[in-house]
Image (cartoon, rainbow, N blue to C red; front, side):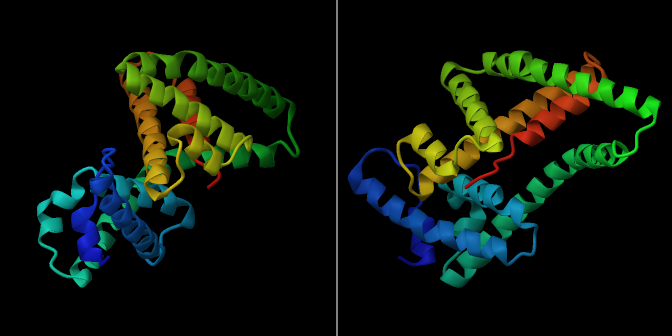
Length: 239
C-alpha cells in the first residue's frame, strides 16, 4: 500500500472486517513512516514516541480528512504533510515538558546540596520531603479522583486505568507491552497508539486541573509545584 493510499484509508476500527482490514494495513504503513520522519527531525529522542502516537491518533480520528491532507496527490506530498504534522506534535510535547523542567532542576540541586548540608539546609530538606509526601498523597487520593469524577463514566474509567498503568510503568512494575494488552486486548500498531494517546490525554487533563487550582489560588505554590512533579512522574518509562 502506498503512503497516499494509506493516508486516505486510515480510520478508526469499527469491527467490520471488510472495512477494518484496509484501515489496519494503512496503520501498518503510516506508523513506521511517522516514526522515521520524527527521528530525522532532530528532537530529543524521549519526545518521539508520544509525539508519533499523538500524530497517528489525530490522523486516524479525522486529521486525514482536513484540507492539507486532501491536497496530497503523491507519496512525496504525503511525506511532507506527515513531517509537518509530527513536527508540530513534537513542538507541543517539547513546550509541555519545558514547563516541568524547572522542577527537575530543583531536584538535582537538592541532591547536590544534600552532600554537605548545613543545619538550616537539613531542616529545609526535611520540610521538602514532608511536603512531597503529603502533596503526592493528596494528588492520588484527591486530585486524580476529582478529575475522574468530572468525566462521563467511560472516560472516568479510562483516566483511572491510565494513571494506574503509568504509575506501574514509572516504577518498573510492568512494561508497555503488558499495558497495551491489558488496556485493549491487542498489541498492534493502532492499539499501541491508542494507549499512547490515552496516557497523553490523561496527563493533559490532570495538568489542566492543576492550572485551574493555581489560578483560583486554592492551594499553595509549593503544593502546585509538587502536583506538577507528580504528573511529570507519569511520563511513560517503558515501551
